[in-house]
Image 1 (cartoon, helix red, strand yellow):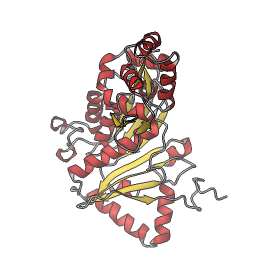
Image 2 (cartoon, one colour):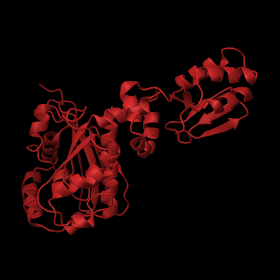
Image 3 (tube, rainbow, N blue to C red):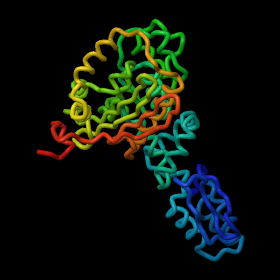
Image 4 (cartoon, rainbow, N blue to C red):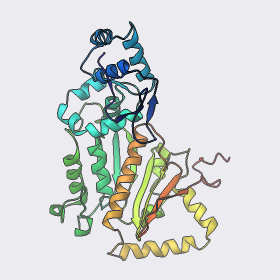
Length: 360
């Protein structure tokens, strides 16, 4: 064991006997009382020393026998301890790709805060490597989402779309200007490859033939995210595949809901709820869809589309890492020019056959 205090949390002394790890309230931890000698020992728990050396150094600075082990247990219990050798075989396999680990350094730092046990950051990256995600849509939102997921270590990211890249599809972090005229799916796949740290799993490797863990629905036409077609999601609902909606429509960005089939509201629930509130909705929706098929322009501000892509990718990663993001059962919306992100609850509808409402 080569323990180290997690470097992701900045350290500061609140007073002579109290130390705070972390600045922001979400992950900050306060420990005390900490005497001067124990503070010196904590400084030396940096991953370069094994327990035998730490015990010897603790004795050398006047700490009693057993104090080094007690401090290590104390830090571990507070979720502040990592171990340069922890994580098991999968984490060790990740360490075998030092260039990828260096690229993913900030991601590892974030994962170390979410997975509090030693080695949890590398286990998290190893788990991402075994995941397969599909993104439907390769416009300003979809391709950026796909690139972010690949860049964050998701092992297999597929992008589905038709047609050829148009100038309006180009966005920083997504499709490059040189991709104009190419097939959209092909150009998006290139953006994913360029974003990935290291090569993806090959044939026969873990993750290469994995089932879909998530579908991200990020259509170029934001109407299909604002009012998703239940028919499109029918196969995912039947197969139990989680799916997340994201897009921009008329200067309004949206992320969510994240649909967990049978557990949270689905596209069918949303459609029924809208009809309950507004009987004219189906009539208007038919007209809007017809108009959007003919329309060539869209109000999809680049700053807003980038914000939507980033938030959607973050929610997707949170879910893939085993958490429950705020988009599960809700849609987050922000409209120009104020851009206040607000949650809109999306509740299961009792008449929807998805079963999320629990109604017979």
